[in-house]
Structure formats: C-alpha cells, structure tokens
Amino acid sequence: MRRWLLAFVAGFLAVLCFHQVALGLLHSAGIVPFAPFSLTPTEPLGVPSVLSASFWGGLWGLALVWVLARWGNSLVWLKAALFGGVALTLVALIVVFPLKGYGFDVAQLPARFVIGFILNAFWGVGTLVFLRCFGR
Image (cartoon, rainbow, N blue to C red; front, side, top):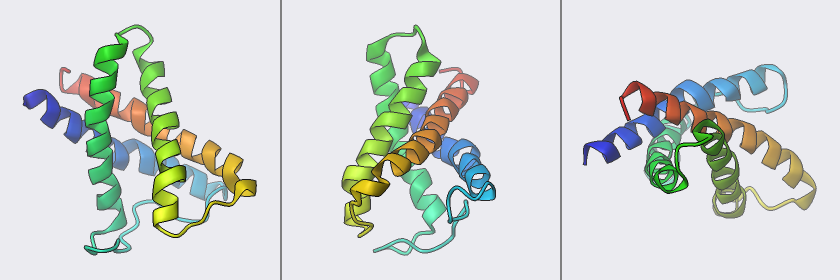
C-alpha cells in the first residue's frame, strides 16, 4: 500500500516540479502558447488545470511503477523517460485531446507529439527522481 501511495505522490509532484517547469521553458521560448501552472477550471468539476494534471500524473505514477517493476532496473532512467514520453503523449493525442475538443489535425501531429514527448519525458524522469528520494 505504501509503495502505491508513494508512486502516486511522486507522479503528482513530478507534474508540478518537472512537467510544468519544462512547459514554462517551452512557453518562454515561444514554442507553446500557454503558460504553466494554469488555474483555469477544468470540466466538469471546476478543478484548476494544474491540480487536475497533477492528479492524473499521480495515477500515471502508479502505472509507471508497475511497468518499471516488470521491465527491470537496467537503464531505468531511459525507461522512465520513454514511458512518459511515449505512453502519456499517445494517450493525450489519441484520447484526451479529442475528448476535450482539440481535434485531430494530422498536420500538427508531429509537432504536438514532440512537445508532448518532451513534457512527458520530463515527468517520467521527475517521477523517478521523487521515487528515489522516497527510497523506492
């Protein structure tokens, strides 16, 4: 039980400390138009966007711990980055964006994937950083 709680907390914190910081850097560079740490309410509960993203980051932290336990400890940092970069980005592009009405513009797909990969790879590494700080 403790392992799963720490996995959730690590994923939650990784959104705040890694994902959103990377988003801030991309925003400052003019690559993405939206700023990090958005307090814009989400539908349908009106939760601030950054807290919603952190909650989902916590749930993904559970998945990351489960996957890493099966993949082994070699190259674990790379595996965490790839899990975040690929799995989270594909789910965002294929499931989340259409549900939020962002559409599926094939011309924008490569750029969206690269940006998502960067943000979510930072999340994956950040989650692993927190897990290591918690003593696994």
